Length: 365
Length: 108
Ligand SMILES: [Zn+2]
Image (spheres, rainbow over the protein chains, first blue to last red):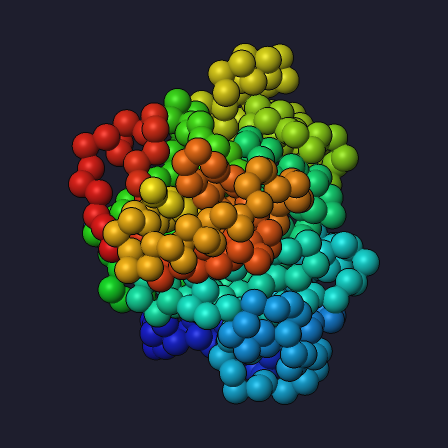
């Protein structure tokens, strides 16, 4: 298929046009979908992708509507929550980029959970999605406070505003989902798993909104968060942890990509944002091996594990891995390529996925 | 006397450290008065808020770890003061990370 519309425009149409131009957005997504494998190639000769059969299309279309109840507040540069309510569901855009990006990003995230996993909002019962933007002065962070997502504007030197990245918005909302499901304790290995789950669903929200398959996806978290001054692509790379940035001011991405480099530290609730690189890579490797839409296989498997009720709040990497192998087998069959890809992903990062090996995994912490 | 404030966690997982020599400040007496007011001893643990900053404040022989929302009153005043007095070092090496051993530590 000759490409008339450049990919970046397709991205924009697919991403931003969904509300006003659902058909154009869907068309752009299909087009991206077809072009994606070719665009992802580096140095290899271009290959025309085969046309997809209809039954290869997602079982649920990316722009199927969902009905979030969004409430965006403005902290006006103070550190007081919730701030002033400035945009409710179905209200028009405010013209404040942070407010409107948060509104759109929460809509994209709600749509993934609702249309793909059948979960209506954070609690599965349609709870309002509340966010506060413009929190603090030059505030270099975004967080989940147990009730709402909170976004700073960044310092303007290293970080731009934290609503600039859809994967970051998805990441924060996913903390709410984890809190309402597996409740992974935010400390040590279970805390790194909590972080990992947020990165995984943050990446899936972005892929779903763009109609990207696993091969075309960047697997970056927080792309576009850094200013142009920073030598870096994103906050984290799920597929290549430790390579997202390397900058004179910021230092180097400290994430390990294998269990042998697991970092023991008291900081950061026991290195939750560091060691999450290990399960992140297992997830991205499995998704890449399976290709196709990650939300349809690894996303589904991870969501099943998160909601199975079998994970302890203090789950270790090995226990979580074993549960994902179990949910892969339950959904796709023992010996299925999905189950094998998940097992191989964990093996590649040195995490034993068999329940019998859990003891060894825990001892190696 | 030194005051060291270390901020870890946050969505980016970056670590910043501010270090101030109180005796080299233009107003050391005010620093000492403020440090006297600090209710040293570990504050009660609070449930962690995902991605929120964690502060470790050292002022030998005292030290304490606080969640960001526990930074109130004299704690907040001390941290504000430290952050105004000096620029932070970013991502100081982590113990046990062999990749970091030979790296130049940029300051800011
Ligand atoms: Zn997080």
